[in-house]
Image (cartoon, rainbow, N blue to C red):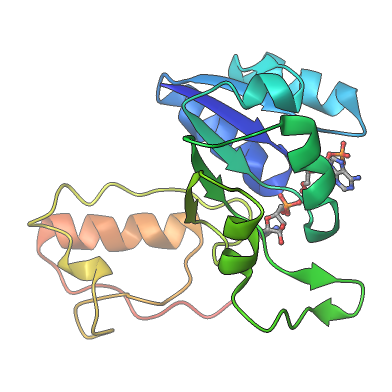
Length: 179
Ligand SMILES: NC(=O)c1ccc[n+]([C@@H]2O[C@H](COP(=O)([O-])OP(=O)(O)OC[C@H]3O[C@@H](n4cnc5c(N)ncnc54)[C@H](OP(=O)(O)O)[C@@H]3O)[C@@H](O)[C@H]2O)c1
């Protein structure tokens, strides 16, 4: 699938990495420092383009700081009909901004006609997926939390791998990690 990323920093950059690894055709765009985009492209096999090129993809990921969303969308051009995955959060210099409605509603209204969805915004940068084996083996990731599920807990990769190993071996899962 063709994926266009507008804002390839912590979150957009990691989405680009993962989707490129999965074999998707990824275009990364929108940076003050074009050298960083070029380095990410060299690392991942993604193509560097401008936001209007990213906007020609089937799926467009919007992952820029809140204050530059209008600038990014203006550079992208119309996104009607596109699946738009919005990772953004409404933070300004004074912290979270009270919009009077959800940030998702706010951004969906800036994207007329787009097939808008908001994802990844509650994950921290550097997240890694773990494969639990399928929909009948994934009780460990579902509510309620504990004793046999880690729903809502935060994990570093090695600790997550230990949980997966325990699940696969049929052992009790390790205790909640403390960082
Ligand atoms: N970090 C997190 O843990 C996290 C988690 C979930 C969601 N989010 C949200 O996802 C969005 C992206 O977060 P992020 O942490 O990935 O941000 P980030 O690392 O700062 O990435 C932002 C990207 O936008 C580019 N950009 C282009 N013009 C810019 C401008 N005028 N000012 C600032 N950046 C500009 C940056 O490139 P240049 O620096 O080269 O300009 C960078 O590649 C934000 O809305 C954030 O709230 C963040």
